[in-house]
Length: 185
Image (cartoon, rainbow, N blue to C red; front, top):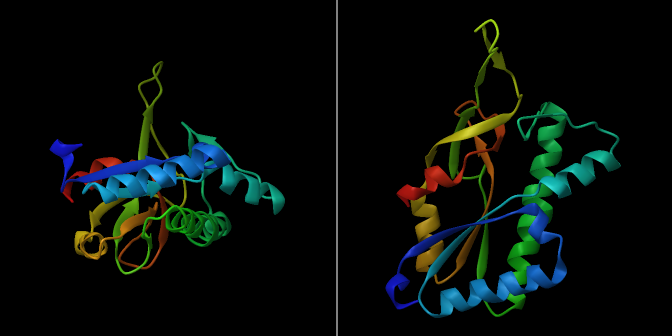
């Protein structure tokens, strides 16, 4: 613990782990302890199962390509609602209940995560023909406004970030390949 004191540690908190109440409580306590001993956790959460459940409840069928949800205009609205309003706030409340101080940072607000549409190219191994898969509103970050995250840490809080981004035209994207971009914080 001493060697990490004062450092920032990015933690990906998956949607499947959130579904277990005991694990969720333990996670929140551990984050609070890390902060207490001087380590600065930054939480990026998922929410695949919770998004899937909400889509099912609204009778919207999900399709996946290589584990990525194809996200149309209606689906991205539900993704935003579930990630920002349900999951993010729940994680913040659980951390606060466990003695920590957390702050919600929706990735698609205040230019926190600037994103671009994710382009996936595949090649047919038989014909070597390239094909571009359109996943809709699935994106990858191009930049992260680290001063917002650092401000939360400076205020002795734990940032809890939803994996959403926005492009320069205001389109919201469900973010994938997120952790790689966080190395610059």
